[in-house]
Image 1 (cartoon, rainbow, N blue to C red):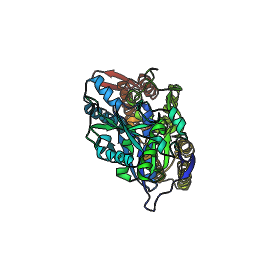
Image 2: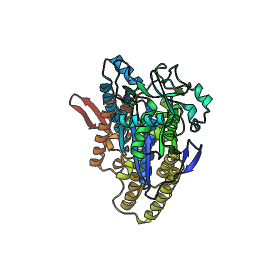
Image 3: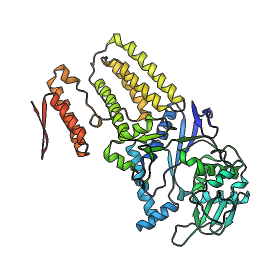
Image 4: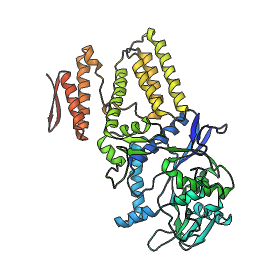
Length: 474
């Protein structure tokens, strides 16, 4: 398997030990607000990636931090008249709700920054001892001029780093403009912890290396995050950990997801185009957002617009129609089709695996899925049905949008109406009616109207009453 490595700027072969253990870290949320769909893009992408690695037999320990102390949290808590710890607890719970809806459930451990203060202090102590840090009136800072490899991840020189001053470390007393804070001395009313240098709290960058070191040691396999974290956040992580340990590289493979835009503009509250995961789910199924995240290559930009969403609906309808058709196939075997079906399944299994092995190329893999649906003959026997179902269920362990309960499908396959089986036909009509009711309850009235028309086209009418819907044969 090959993955694009931000550190080397090339596709590198994934090489791990004989035990196939992979230590994997992804920067998690800063829990002071609801997560937005850009976060969803990153976390869905890495969730699917980890699930694929596990499917291939790798033993992945997936670690994700939770930033539960920083300037933004303190500011927001003050604005809302809350304790910072109460604010972060609330939004951490909301984050977990969002991830559950998106089927992001592959993380082995979530680690809160405030649970690792001792480990953070230990790293700051060692940076001071090794001559990479200094103290000024508001805190302890990292001296980027002392680390000769600073900028190797982002391809910035020290001078270029000076121009990219971090917005969170703007002290005029710093030695270098690009220096960043490791430990902030406490101000009145702010959360604080005891340290050898006085009460204070950690800087943003140091929490990740301290948490990762406590689980993985000085070096590990893969670090992931969004592209905007390459500088200064991930560059700072490299400088910190390699200065602490004297070992290089801190991380062997760096993976970064592309930006998500809204109508080709950067998402921003000032532009009134800021879309939280919760906002999205109020209009569309979480399944749509998971598909949106995986339809593009994880390194590519993704643009969110209604045209794209409409296209996703049509593509998922095709999947739902196919999955529904499988459930209505004959229970007798069709020996003449069995070998052909098995060969087709093997061909597409290899195609999808080959594309995912190549830098986790999900859009090409998804295109192969649709080619499979178009190619396979739906008029199959019982054993063929079992083979196809196993194939779909296996790849859906990665994708997470193929197999859904009948009531969550966007279309219902009505094979029974073509066979003249009256009882089965009416059962399918009732399922359609339930789907319509769900659409109406979610405010998706256009979709509800489309389902009503399908019901009428099958020769039935539907009436809404206080007691619920009533179905009559026309």
